[in-house]
Length: 509
Image (tube, rainbow, N blue to C red; front, side, top):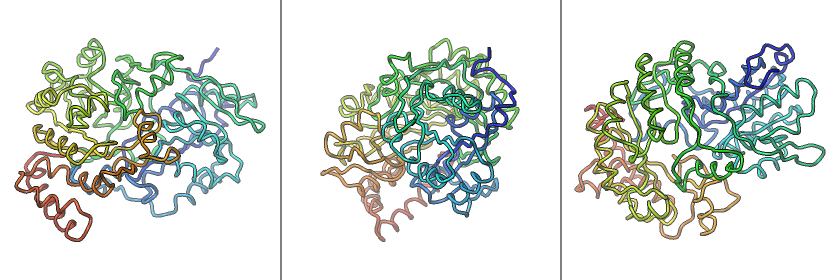
């Protein structure tokens, strides 16, 4: 008997049309694992699939653009590969596709900052009476909120690959589809809430990138556009950061099984080979909450097998996972870049509020190991945490000044649903529990008495200046924090000096 993970060519499945919708911020150009994996699972079962992707539409959400125009990325131009914004209306285009394609179901994938865009897309075709299912991180942590929306018929409350395949197969055959694990289903004025389930990662399909516009494969890195693809290594994390959804996933699914799971290295290698061959991939992003926290034997096996592929790659990790031996091994297999999460430079706050227990000295020492290697280093930071003061933000800047990195990114904290800090912000009265968080590149949504959103935004935009310029320039940088005429003039002058000094001398972003 066939299972959802088997490849089939079934005439009933081939006649069933699935319209996937990826509500995305403008020019946030890395192809996502989420919708690519769903499409891969459906493709394996022979379904007809199309994708509506909002990435090339300007102004549809706040944020996105890979921090374009800021000091946190090297300058590049999408014109080099012929990428430009789509000038037509996103809702008109979506409706036109729905009318032409006549899907049997619409599947929407969203995160919290793109939820409203996704829902408005569904509303724009609601009169066509096409069944809808909504999934993604936001749906998992706020299923009651999502299922209550009149544009939504079903919500995926867990991993979606198996659930969506089973749903589509039952719908294609006219069978009852109300009792599928990981789905909530509206039926007869009621909501059927099925149980959660956790999958085995070795059952997952290869990611399907064929659904995207051919230009979506390009993603900027260090001032150059690469044909880049993500490769999923694991789901879950061993750490418990309070601003991250990973610990919340572990807690939410603890009765169903272990959330932290790793793909077999043999599967990963096979996937990479196929992506390189099928899509002419020249750069890889390894998707893992903390890449170097993988089991030692898996890391060594991967380093032993990867040289036969050899194309450059990039990943995220934490300082405490770094050793000199691991960095040497990564150099040997063409690791191009790694991003290290520092996040906050105030040790007490980092330990007590963020549950990150590594000391500043240890962070600087671990980063120095990478700085001395041939691997580019990006340091990731977050400011605007609840109760964080201006002086504490400068603690983060001071720690970054001790790190010789190629780039320093600064995000603005967002209280995403499901995280511990979301609950804390609500309890403190800093945040409306019914509000939706926005993109972490935009502004603070917290209402705190000791610091304003404008102050946080100003500090975020000049963050690299405070990190790299001498303290004698701090009075000038302080002016550039302001969003007035004087502040804009100061920011433009300092930005030009920054790029000329660091980007053009080889310290790429």
